[in-house]
Image 1 (cartoon, rainbow, N blue to C red):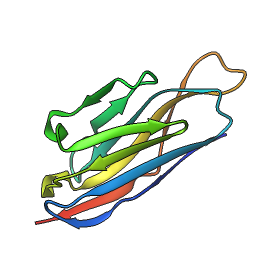
Image 2: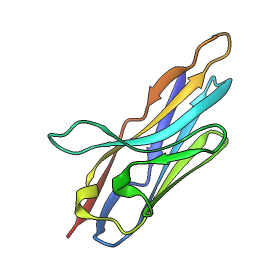
Image 3: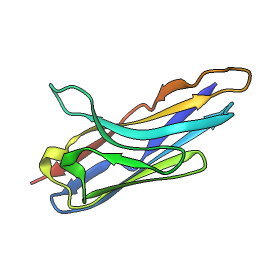
Image 4: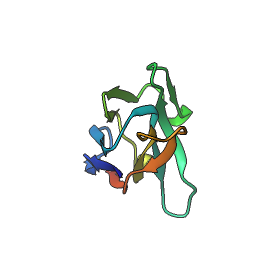
Length: 119
């Protein structure tokens, strides 16, 4: 079994910073892409940032130059600076993991962590 545990959400004023962290644990042979998505009330879940196993990154236009994604072993972090009220959402960690004895990677999601930015 694989589990993703997120931490670091909370309430912050506009212009502030937060750091989200996600740790994968369990039966893991290898991890491919890791990323963060978010979902605001009434809206669809959207990509925030992803990082490949080769450390190539991709960001949503709305967070470029403000957010930085990084990874180390089985963890992926999202440093969020210059936060805006429109960044308010539930943030979800997502990874593609290959378990021992399996040929394909499987998609896993964290439970979500609330980020609220007040104006």
